[in-house]
Image (cartoon, rainbow, N blue to C red; front, side, top):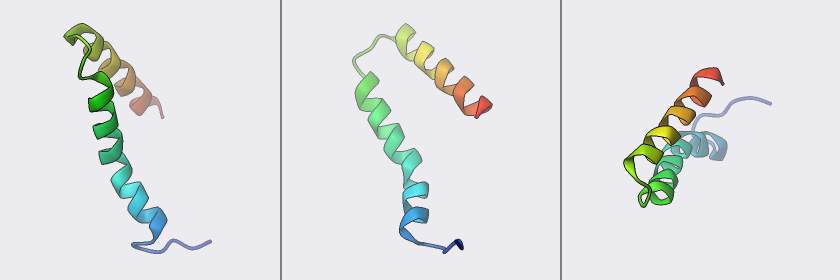
Length: 50
């Protein structure tokens, strides 16, 4: 399998972070600041470890 620039997989990979950001925003906008901070810390730890 070879990597093709601007293939469907490449475009999805680029936009996945933006899509995840929008989804997380809508899922957490009703939470209080403490809960959102905890979610942010957990996601940061996951991002650093993976």
